[in-house]
Amino acid sequence: MKWPWKKKTLSFDEAARFNWALDTNAELRQELDELAKQYTNLSEKEYRRKLLLLFQGNGLVIDADQLDMLLLLRQKTDQMLLRREADHDEETR
Image 1 (cartoon, rainbow, N blue to C red):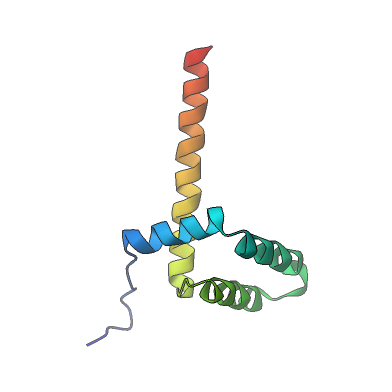
Image 2: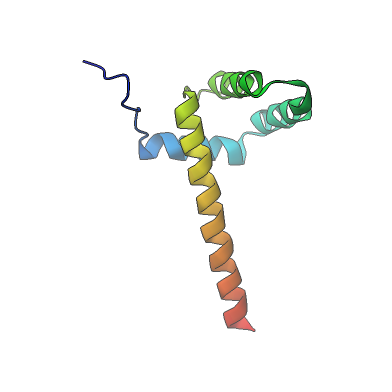
């Protein structure tokens, strides 16, 4: 039985595939840039719908909750890497 209040979890493979697509798929990046230019003319719901469609069109079938989780994970990872880089820069001075 599927419980409506249980969120689908993400596997490591799904997270890695998402990050790989964002980092290496030039077509997806171009489409995301074009969508970002439309941001002010779209409702948040419409923007997110189009964002999910872009990912689905590039083989990443995720829902809105998973997108939020993946973006948060990516943001936190970036923060950790930047902090590590800053710490390394301070050590080498």
